[in-house]
Length: 101
Image (tube, rainbow, N blue to C red):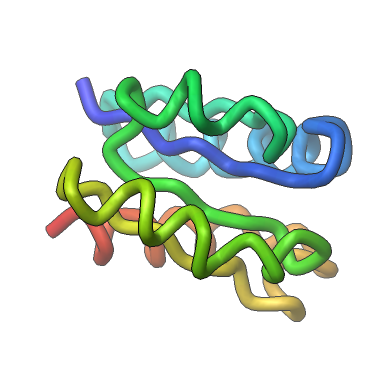
């Protein structure tokens, strides 16, 4: 099973987006695990993720997390601010799937 990890400042602001992504994955009959964690915990969780998406509020962590994830072959990207703000779970899921392809 593939795992998508969303990171934000405290792991809370992405919880609604995670729910919308899970709903969309269910609609599409995809078996994907989607979780939100605080960016401060990513080092311990990175090995469990297939892709990491950062909330716009922590995009400053992109370079550091890319350096950590590249040797593991795990893509990292920032969620589009409009998709994040409007809770477009379908579009964020599409982005994650594209990164894992």
